[in-house]
Amino acid sequence: MGSGPADEELMLRYGGGDTAAFETLYRRHRGPLYRFLLRQVKNEAAAEEIFQDVWMRVIDSRGRYEARSKFSSWVYAIAHNRLMDFYRASGRARLLDPEESEAAIAELPAGDPPAEIRLERKRAVERLLEALAELPDAQREAFLLQQEGDLSVEEIAQATGVNRETAKSRLRYALAKLRTVLDQTR
Image 1 (cartoon, rainbow, N blue to C red):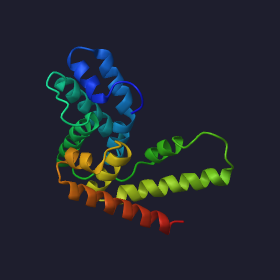
Image 2: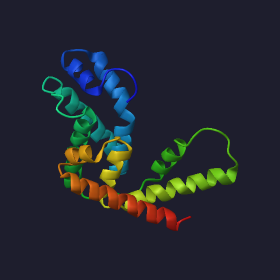
Image 3: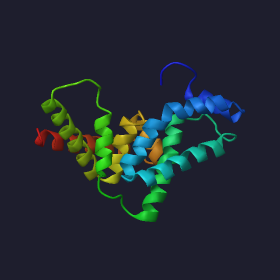
Image 4: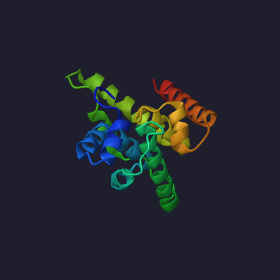
């Protein structure tokens, strides 16, 4: 994650009372973690609630944290567990929110490309988000953990509580389905 102390070191320092270490961790992980949650639950209010709960659990765990694995694996495991609670409490997530599509479009590189290129980019983002929304929950989660969380297959397995081969299979199926959908729409 760039220069500076490793996440695990920052979390240990935070456990020792260094609040600036927590602020650094939060800045590093807030965007990817929030996008991961939003794309899973497809509802801003629910994503925000789960996001806040994940960080509260990080705060509550500061004195007990042990750097046995990467911090990102640990925090995404907390997020995974909170998502499972959410799914149990509310059933499956709703369809893709149009605002999410707009947010993804806003993330496109700045500049002033011609209108037809902007329109094609918008359509490509919409196709990707629709294809992502249609993936089974476990496959979508594996894909987002890799893309948003920058987790390896081993870390995805650890975060979701499955073995390496299951995580690898979920990721492989997700990528294949996304490629198929996107290839069909070209």
